[in-house]
Structures are given as structure tokens and as C-alpha cells.
Image (cartoon, rainbow, N blue to C red):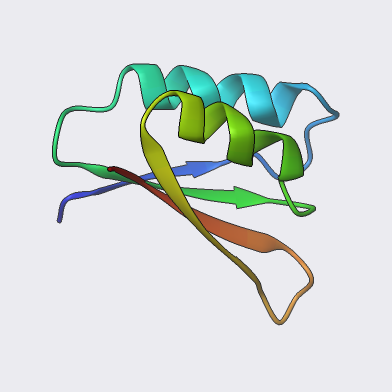
Length: 72
């Protein structure tokens, strides 16, 4: 599929953000990035927007968060 997965649950901030942004930088055009985090990645939204990505973020039943990032 055209979705790349990254799971940064269990890392202390700012490690999840750093890893997600690194994955975004390397993301091939047309691909989406699906990121799993322990908490709502509020700092990610502005950073993603600046880089030309949309964010769709939803809390999961287990309390973790799933964010799908896509090139705008």
C-alpha cells in the first residue's frame, strides 16, 4: 500500500516528534505516513503544516493516538 508506518510509542519527548519529522523528510511523494504515539502529538501539527503535510489525528480505544500525514 501507499502508507508507511512508524510506531514511536514508548519514547520520551521529543524523540517521537524527531523520529516522525525524520520519516516525513524521507517520505516518497504520494506516500502517506501513519504514526502511532502515546499522546496527542500537538507539536507535530504545526511542523507538518510548515512542511506541506496535512494531519488527521484520532485517539485510539487503547488511549494511544494514530496520525495520518499526507502531502497536501
